[in-house]
Image (cartoon, rainbow, N blue to C red; front, side, top):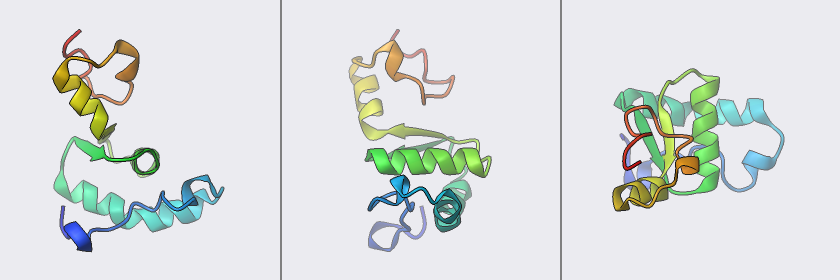
Length: 100
């Protein structure tokens, strides 16, 4: 993504904002991150934590982004062959059946 590293944009879900009950404000703040993700044209966005995952997934649904949001640990477990059927909820059809 660009910008990246220390200049990257926050998704807007951390610091308690995800649970604050202000979805319109959260969506408005997160729109910059959503646009950044959309500009990559990637089919997946990999997230490191629960707050980022929930926010970025919600942004995709709210703004109709069409990308899948997955936890980093989901892909690690998938690659190791340790991802159960019930842990595949956020995978797209291209990965949902891998290793079953």
